[in-house]
Length: 263
Image 1: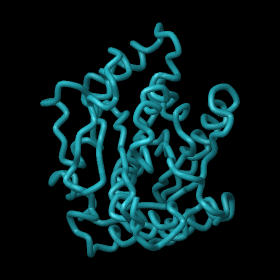
Image 2 (image 1 turned 90 degrees about the horizontal axis):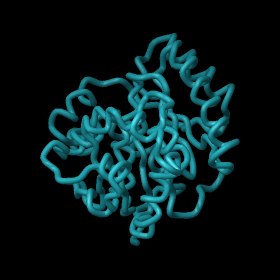
Image 3 (image 1 turned 45 degrees about the vertical axis):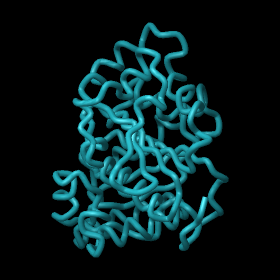
Image 4 (image 1 turned 30 degrees about the vertical axis):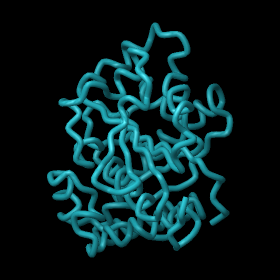
């Protein structure tokens, strides 16, 4: 795999198919990068707010969320919250964001709202992880417009390939109109079940996308599903588990090196 781009990096975690482990992958990779001594900001763009709760933040109790940044002109720095993981921060979301796709329509520069907000804090972070909703509305378009690259987690099942094709077409459209440098840089096979079908999906993805596919495959585990209820990524909840170890390897692939780094 080629050398990673220079820091800072803004990575949109996206997949137009729901239930493929996108949010779990986003917050876990973010935590792994933070463990490698990078300063990481997660931006929760999903109205369900799963990235927020998965990192132990209850956005219902906060004065400002990413909704206020996108629709009310709040400064991004005013809605960033620390997490229990050192070096890891989050701009949380809650159900207020559910109507944002419609509310953004009449706004001037509506596709650039997130990009402009991130530009005010980007010098404070090495990585900004964007957890996009599983659809191509204005929230996802904002994420793709702000991003320097796209990370696609795909579930090792047949229909996941169909969702991947849809996402690639969406990324291509955004790159043509709004973000000419945008590209899918990493694809990770997650929720692997050690079945023939799962192996076939991994093989087909590798055949089509080559070095963009992460070398490490993340196995399915009930421990991953349990972690969010404790407000922790799997790397904190059960660091010795197979999925935690796999995500740590993927984070090393993304960052381009195995060792911790001082800022």
